Every structure is written in structure tokens, then in C-alpha cells.
Amino acid sequence: MNVLDIQAREILDSRGFPTLEVDLYLADGGSGRASVPSGKSTGSREAVEWRDKDSERYFGRGIQGAIRHIEEMILPSVRNKPFEDQAAFDQHLIQLDGSSDKHRLGANAILGCSIAFARAAADAKHVTLVESLSSAFGAASLRFPIPMMNVINGGKHADSGISTQEFMLVPHGCSDVSEAIRMGAQTYQTLRDILELKGYRVAVGDEGGFAPQLRSTVEALELLTMAIERAGFVPGTHVSLAVDFAANDFYHNGRYEFEGNSWTSSEMTEYCLEIVRRFPIVSIEDGLAEDDWEGWGAHTSRLTGSGVQCVGDDIFVTNSEIFRKGIDQGIANAILIKPNQIGTVTETFDTMHLAAQAHYGTIVSHRSGETDDSFIADFALATASGQMKAGSPARGERVAKYNQLLRLLEKFPHVPLASDIYRR
Ligand code: PGA
Ligand code: ZN
Image (cartoon, rainbow, N blue to C red; front, side):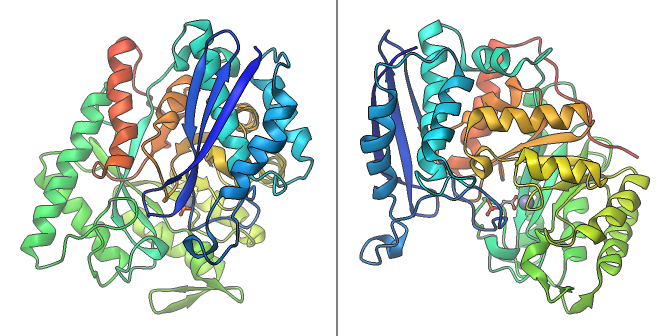
């Protein structure tokens, strides 16, 4: 595949900050477009996105430098050069950048080109993106991901005053992804009614979940369990709960400063176990901070012992080297997969292969700053990731991903919904 041209532009993301969109054209007629998301509650070891730091434009968050890198460095180096496959293209970009964290060209510049290439390659081969990705990944079979829908936003994503960043609905007691999406969406609407009835505001946070001024995480879990029941589902059987503490944000000087408490790692772990006992929680993400590796070992064994999925996001940052160390040390039993944490499609595949070998669960994820690009939906299906988190079933940039799953179900009607969340 020969690259003919790449066009890059600055567009706005869902928070109104600039992000990158890339169009890539192959010489034999295939083309693909991609846009890049951006996180707010980021791990410190993520690949580095390019920001201009020009305070005159977008408070320094412009990405014109990333566009320049594509036009002046990436395009001249790939134009009319044959690339056998995605791995060869991505390897070229990695070498061209030459840094370990992609700060030279910018992880946003690199990922935009990598995903646009994936789409253009599928187009050139006249196959769907899912088919093209799944053969590049080497998936044995396809599976629709169980959606994780973030319906109450806290932490850095909302001014709700709750320390916990994300409260997610996990609709899994069904055989079909459209049923799962319906169950999640109906529960979301029922939650809205409950919040209104109780006099809470129903404004939403960055990921489209409600951001009410609740007293505590436990109150949020109570309201969610009530919403599942009132929507006509059985908590834990049809719809379960998942939590992302994003504990980095309240970890200071070795203590977890959580909702008026100042806890050690083992106290934080005790708290996780207590809410698991009280509520239908199947998954806990970043229950401890990325630097608390010692705490994570005990945290994992305690949670795994009670049958809960224990997810590493900020601690692993989709980086296969860091993840390998985590596997060796028995940290977490599942990994969050965010392509922009590492910067290319191929490296994201590598981390997922490692997860499969080590029997870790995988959750393909959006970022809090998103666009209407629904790549992660195709990616989650193609890699049989098992789970996908894409925010609430509301707001255009979130539903873009769920709606793409509904379209894909028309194309792949016999592909089942995954069924492998850790269960008690
Ligand atoms: P971010 O948060 O996209 O703001 O980094 C998402 C997460 O922590 O899972
Ligand atoms: Zn997270």
C-alpha cells in the first residue's frame, strides 16, 4: 500500500478544545479519516500528545504543531513508499518519532495517521474495517463487547463533589448487543427520573453521565441499584455496576483522601470490598493510584478473591512494557485499552495479545474528550475485547460508539455478545 497524500486539520473535541483529524489517501484509491480523543484524568506514563503551548490560541492547547509534523515530516517520509501492512506503517512512524513516549511528533499526530491508515487499508481491500482489523489482530472469532455506560460522573469529569470518577451500568444479562444497549439506556432514563424526583439536578458531566451533588459514593450506588430495579431489571443478573475510582486524583503523600477519609491502601481496598459486598459491582478500575504498586498486589488478590474484575488503567496506560511488569507482579486481572495512551494501532494490538496470554480481561475505552469518530466500536468487535466503555447512552460523541455497534450488528448478526466479565 502506497500513501499518496495525508491531510490533517484542527477540529474541536467534545469539551470544545482542539484535536486532530486526519485524512489519508492511498495510491490505489483507498482512503480513511480518523480523529483523536484526549483524556483529562491521565496516567503520567501515557504517550504524549502534541500541544502548541501558544497561549494566544486555545489557552495553549492548539495542535497546529502536530499538523506541521504530519505535513513536513510524516508525509514526505511515507509518500510513495510501499507498506505491506498496518504493522509496517506503524513501525515506520514509531522509528520516525524515535522517542519512547512519542513526544517528538506527538502521539496525537501518530495515532491519527495510524487509524486513518487502518481505515484506508480496509477501503483499498474492499473489506469492512472490522474484517481488516480482525485479520491484522489475528482474532480467532468476533464478539460484541459488553457496554460499560458511565451514567454518574464525578472526580475530574464533573463538579458533583463525589471523589469517584465514574459509575457505570454493565448490562450483560442478554445475548445481543442491541438488548444490552436498550437495557443500559432505559436504566439511564430511569435514573434521571429518580434524580429529578429527589430534587437533584440532572445536568451532565464530560462523559454524559449525570453530575448530581450527592453526599457520597455509597449514595450514588444506592440510586443506581434502585434505577436498575425500577427499570424492570434484576441488579446483578441483567444489569450490574462498575466503578472507576481514578484513584490517582485523590492520592496525596501516600494516603487516599477519599470523601472526608484519609486512608492507607489497605483501608482503600477494604472500602472496595465493602461496596462489592453491598452492591452488584462486577468491576473496579483504578481502585489504587498508579504509583502504589505495593498496594496493588494485595488489592488485586483481595478483589479477585471476591470474584471482581480489577482493572488497571492509569497504572498500565496500554503500554506493553509496563503491563508485562504488572502481570509479573500479579497486578490487576484486567486492563483498560486506550489507543491514544500508547499511540498506534499495532502497539494497542500488542498489549491486547499480552492480556490474552496472561488471561487478563480487556476493556476498549474512549477518553473523556471525544469526537464523533466511532473507531473503538469496530476495534472492540474486531479484537473480541469482551467489554467497551464509551460513556453514557447520551451525547453525540458517546452514542456515536454505541450506534456504530448497532450498525455492526446488522452486518454481523450471528456474532454473540461477550459473556466473560469476572463474576462471583
Ligand atoms: P480520561 O478518563 O479520559 O479523562 O483520562 C478516563 C478514565 O480514567 O478511564
Ligand atoms: Zn480510568
